[in-house]
Amino acid sequence: MFQLTKHFTCVLLCCFSVAVLAQSKEELQDKKEKLQNEIKLTNDLLNEAKKEKNNSINTLSTLNRKIAARNEMISTLGIEIGLYAKRIQQLEQEVFIKEESIIKKQSELQSLKEEYAKLVYHAYHNRGAYDRLAFIFSADSFHQAYKRIKYFQQYSQFRQQQVKLIEEKEAELETELLSLKQNKAMLLVEKNQKTNALGNTEIEKQQLDSERGEQQSLVNDLVKQENELKAELKTKEQQAKVLDAQIRKIIEEEIRKAKEAAASTGTPSFSMTPEQKELAENFTTNKGTLPWPVERGVITERFGKQKHPVLTGIETYNNGIKITTEKGASARAIFDGSISRILNIPGAGKAIIVSHGDYFSVYNNLSDVFVTAGQSIKTKQEIGLISTNSSTNETITELQIWKGNKKLNPAQWLYRAY
Image 1 (tube, rainbow, N blue to C red):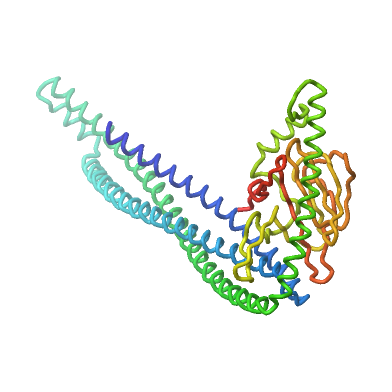
Image 2: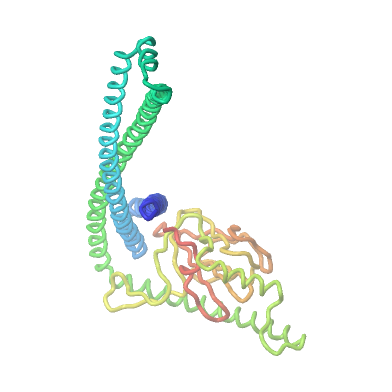
């Protein structure tokens, strides 16, 4: 009983292991596909920058993002290769066990056939019905004659059982041989996939080396533009301060209106309507799964304090994230809400503030808007056209998320592609 339980446990663990491996392979394949899409997008954006001969900080950031995705791809391929190696080891062990089992079954079948051949040979030499009757009637007593009759009956049954046993063993052996064939085919597939993954890893590494060379060359070119970069940084900081001040003012006004509305109903503090409260709760629940504000894009500037990628000792601070996308792309709402305000930022285009209860999302650097203040909007609804810089030909939007007057990291709220 213990051996049976132990065998069942081993089979169960093996099946579980295979299921986990299959699931992991599917997850890795999905991750690889998404990384390939990001690499393709960054590559398209970089090719566009090359056409425009545009060596900008954003081009460097896009290239850095491509290198990061490439590194992630190499890491993912490494995990995949490890899974293939583990699966190959399991299959090789299964093939070995099956081959041993087949050899044993073939030996058993051979023994059964030899025994049956002896029975047939003996039956052939004692085939005459007269001889059998003579043997029975020559018995010394009725009891002895009865025993001889039973002997012939049992002998016949034994021969039939032997035939049945041989057929069963042959069927088992055929099943084992088919299973062995399937395992060997699977083993060959896994080995080929591992070889392909190793080859792809080498290709990715070669491309990574090339991209790192491009990165260093671009950094060297940008270092020579130190004065221009500092002037550009100063302009961006001034625009960010203007936008920040306007957003704060609008949010404070929203809070003040809510307090006044609450006070009129006898509630002394900031209170949302039931609809706003439900909207805010849903927004919170969807953290990490919100759609991107563009259909295709890559984050080229992160939230918060960041080291300048070229200027030594200089740090920047972003109130949101900058997303580089394709020319002609539209900004999309990341969640249901209503348009609080549409702003004009000198030198930085238009911005839209969307209210989601006590959360606010901000979409900056738009050349045109498709909505009006007070309008209710739905998730993924296009709300404006993202501006394309006429001198650099870059299309960049900024997304900010606020809760009350507190800035949040948008990257933590958006769906992560991998």
